[in-house]
Length: 121
Image (cartoon, rainbow, N blue to C red; front, side, top):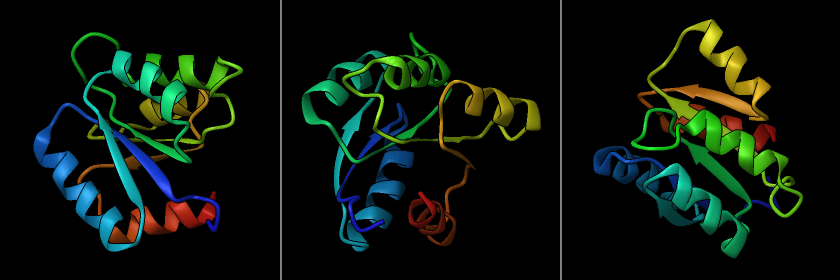
């Protein structure tokens, strides 16, 4: 976990962004935000965050699509993606991991779970 300092939250819900940002800031992380999959792609190339927390259900490009694009692009392929979503079915989880995500968190996100997942990377 020592090398993770900058985390990008990709979520179109201001409430979710606020909750996750609070947890991360309190734990010493710098946070940036993208509200669409498309924005996540461009920002991940420009900012090279150490970790991306990706929502699935967003307008336009889904989080699954954005994860696949980020993890398959040589420029951003080394950035771990953790999917954070309300979609808690095992099939959703399996699909998310197949898109290249390193892990999967079902919302609501708790500090304990989020920190454990980040430490485990």
